[in-house]
Length: 251
Image (cartoon, rainbow, N blue to C red):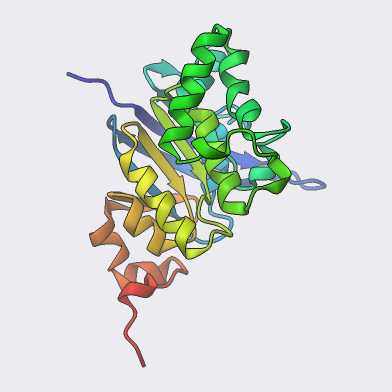
């Protein structure tokens, strides 16, 4: 039997409050699993812990009571963190925080070079990754000359050079124009790896994902197909969300 790519049981996380004895609980009793290749949208109102959960998965935040967290066949702990970061790709909400080399090729190549691949192998991986996101004709373009959508695609190409088993994305459709938004959806649908996408853009989640996990008050309020969750107006409104625009009736 194939092992789940994500296996979470009873995860808790709290941010320490300054000048107070009680911590601010963000995530409580989070439990879910995901199979290889699943595309999952992580939704919820502001402050429910979507970004926090992604950061825990890549070791940017450390939960005091982590419960059981197993990702890509490895337990989440300091010993496995380096290897986990090779198996998991993380796309920041702000692409400018992720791109720091002079041009697209150099930036996309950075992760593969840092992992010790030969220059021949780096070139092969970068060429494949740029082709996947349709930036192969812009390889030498300077980062500062890129549009917001192109920066997002360059960041995705960088993680694809390591052929991740799991890709985590924080608000990937933010600031994208309609053309680049559709382009990104097509790319995500074509990737074979599992994806966990945190977003406020429910129309984007409906188009890009097959399953949705809805967070509310630090807990999982729903976990089901995009159709079952995102068409449930009563459930969404109870969690301070609105129906995707495609399902809202015109006045």
